Each structure stands twice: as C-alpha cells, then as structure tokens.
Image 1 (cartoon, each protein chain N blue to C red):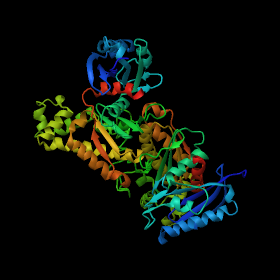
Image 2 (spheres, helix red, strand yellow; image 1 turned 90 degrees about the vertical axis):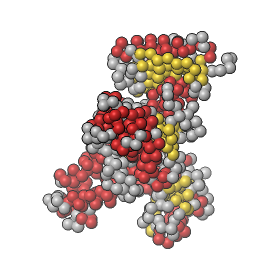
Image 3 (cartoon, each protein chain N blue to C red; image 1 turned 30 degrees about the vertical axis):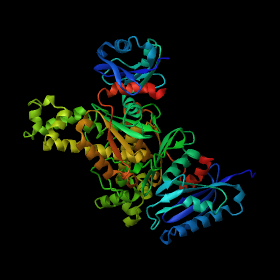
Length: 319
Length: 319
C-alpha cells in the first residue's frame, strides 16, 4: 500500500472544469483548468473531465482513493446522475458518475456543488470540529448546505439546503427561480452588481466610480469591499445592507433548524469583517430568544479553489 | 400481561390542563379538563396534573404504558424540564418529568407541544404512512414540527421547527418574538382577528358583522369560515390571503428541507378547502422547480383533543 493517499476533486462549472489532486489535509498538490465545452454537449464535457483527471493523476494512479465531482443542477447521489444543470445546453439527465468510473479504476462520487462546499468545510475547513452547521455560499447564486450530526442533510430527493431561495419579502424582486424576494435575488452576484450600478447613478461621488475606472461593467464584489475599506460610505452601506438581509434569512433558518453555527463562503463573503459583524448582529436581532446567545457566524476556510477541495472531500467523507 | 395497553396524554396549557386515557389507536377512552392554576406557581400546576392523571387512570394503573406531556416553552427532552413557558408566571425551569414520575410507576415523556402534535399525526394520524413531513399548527401561535425518517427533528437544543417565526417580509408587522413579518404575525389567531376587525370598519356589508351579532369581540376563525361558506366575499378574501401567505413560508421551508408533504392543523386549518387549495397553489407557484409536482398539502387528522392525543402518542413513539 502506498503511504500517502490522494483524492481527485472535479469542480464542474459552465465555463471551466477545474481538477485537482488533493491530499487528505485538503492541500492541492497539482491542478488544471480546462474549458467546459458545454456547447458541444455532454460527451464533450465528459471528455474534458477525463482529460483533466488524467493530467493530474499521471503516474499516481495507484495512490488515488477516489474521484469526487461537484456539479451544478440536480444530482442523484446513488446513481451519480446530473440533471439539467443551468447553463449546460442539451444536457438532460447524464450518468456522469458511471461515465467517469468506466475510465478510472476507483470510486466516483457525484454531489451537488453547494453540498460539496459544505462537505469540504466539514472535512478540511471551518466545520472540522462541528457536529452541525449551516453553510451558505455567496456566488452567482446563493447556495446552501446543511450538516446535521456530521452528515450532509439531503432531504427526500437530494435537493435540500436551497437557502438561496428562501424569501425575505414575498413582494420583493423576482428571482430567476420564479419566486419573489429570495435572498439570491438580493445577494446573487449579478443581482447585487446590477442594483449597485443603478444606485451609483446618484452617487457619482463614490470611490467605486474611480476604482472601476469609470466603467461600471468592471464592478465586482471585490471592488465594493476595497472601496468600503478605503472609507467609502456608499460601498459600506451596500455591505451593511447585504449583511442585514443575510441575517434575516439566516434567523428564519436557525429558527427552523435549531443549528447555531453558520459558515459563509463565496465571493461576497470577501466583504470581510463589516459583513460578518452585520450578519451576526442581524441574526441575533431576529432569531428567537433561546438561540440568541448561541449564534456563531464564521468565514469558510476553503477560499481559493474551494470547488476543487469540496469535490475532493467527497472521497474522504465517504471512506 | 394485560391485553390492552393505554397511554396517558397531558395537554398542558396556560388556562387548562387536559388529560386523557388513550388507546394505541389514538382513541380517547376517558378524559378530564382541569384549571391550570398557573398563578399559584409550578407546584400547584403539578398538583393539578397529578390530579388529572389519577382521575383518568383510576383502577387501570396496571395497563398504563406511560405518560406523555405536551408542554409549551422550551422543553429538554432527556431531563424532562420545561423552561419559561409563555403565560406561566414564576415558572423558571421546572423538572416536570421527574415530578410526575415520582408519583406514578411508569415512564414519563415531556415534549414541546408543537413537536407532540407532529408525533401525534405520525403515530395515529395523517402522517402514519409517511417517512417525512412538515407539520404546521395554526393556533394562537403558529407552531411547527418536522418529521424526518419517521423521527421528530429536534435540532441542537430541541427547539427546531419554529416555522411560526420564519419571516415572509423583513419589513412586515412586528411579532411578539421581537422579529418582523413572521408568519405568526399574520396568521396567529389574535393577530389575524385584530387585522380582520380593523378591515371590517370599512366592510360594514360583510356577513361577519351579522354572524358576530354586531360584537366584533366575538369574532373567531370559525365565524370567518362560516361567512366564507355562506358566500361572503370579504371573509373569503381573508382566507385566500392566509393561504397565500402560508404558501410563501412553506415554499421557503420546502426549499430548505426538501420535504414535500405538509400537514396543517389547528383552528385556522378549519378554514377548509378554500385554505388548502390556496396554500397548495401558493407553494407550487413559489417553490423551486424540482419540488413543484411533488407538493402535497393535507389537513391534520387529529382535530378535537389533538393536544391530548399528541401527548399520548409520545409514549407509543418511544416504545
């Protein structure tokens, strides 16, 4: 038996596929990024995944414990199928796990990417010592994962944890899911940036104008954070608003789940201490009394390449 | 061994204590209602509970499997303690389970009343054949219970399932829990009746005025239902509004839990088919796509004396 065992993590996205060889501590030993080739259909995507795995496992096949894949869309865990991921045309239902297993002599685990992120924190990250936590990932979408007794909670069909589609205002802005006032419709990257752009029309004095070189198409959550750090009141107010709203939704979820630790990851989590302080304040203001003192909000530990790491964690979680 | 085994259910409320001798099918064989005597402190309340149990178990002691108590407030299951139930002055933390066990030679189970209601449906009622369901009870408060794999989900401290305090509008009316726009602040009996009373000032033509004999203090959810059945548009609009709002909150919860069956009990559930049709419509409109077709909303089966039955079910659930 080789001494050191690795896992392969595959972060399947609509634009790129990121593949990494990861050790049992969550350290990426080797990684590669390939075009997803989604417009060429599922077979092309699978070919790219295989290519990526081969390139990181080259000459280390005997040390690979398994392959974990974090995929968007509805994932059936046991069957390893991925169904209708957004931004993957002509996909339908694909037996991704089976297709990859045929090419490599090891176990393959396919999981929803939001659940993989939570499992990543559980195995390598901020959730290592926790029995229960709620993970929320703030990216293009707002994803969620729920850990109960050190296990991911999947629900009846594997679709649990869709925190992004909990409403905080039933008459709020329409979300692309069809509902209204979902937290994603406030904090999802595109929704957020669009809102800030509009508001900036009346805030020509904001540092954000300068930081984005007068081209608001270059606006990112990172720039908003930078402007806030540099003392821009408007940028700061955006972050505070995000934190308050995130607190409203998390208070509701804590009331339902009675889980007191929340881990926040993803781009908007880069809003830093202002965000974390505001979220904590907001949850405590809103949650029912017995939970107030127990609330702990912390940043995700897996930051760069969290997708690869989360996917690779599926192998160690299983074994 | 006696052939037939009974359980005792104790429904502890702020005004009255209802105690019943219940068979394994959930049929109440004998029951009694006593004053809670809350103003005389915990000892007096415990004395009343003991008196109630004695009066229904008289001469049947050998056939009693156990005693179940459904209590308001924070209940610690293992210790059998009940902490600060609303409307129980000078209560603090009381070892209710222990106090009752000392008086009777059988097991005693103490559970939060909303969880007991869900367990009641699981053991005797609409949830008998279900693996998972969300129970919501519409009374003075809006209570919730979550059944996962035929077990009540309690969370870290036994406080899970507080569906009543999920917000549907972060700028909505303030709830007595301190938060804003909780579903309880719309559908809790007193909130609802107060709102209807106000609206009736501009709806003097409504049948509700007549049905309540011109005394709006006599207004109840039952009267609203009766008026709607008799064709009163205003009363009907109230029920539809309740159904829509209930749907908003349940869609959020289904998105988090991925549990597709919802059982609704309590007084407002007496709003009947109009309510159930609207709730179902509203959830399906708002829930994420993969869950839409799976949603089933049904009325609780335990209606009269649901409190006694739910409490008694704790004994059969455990054994």
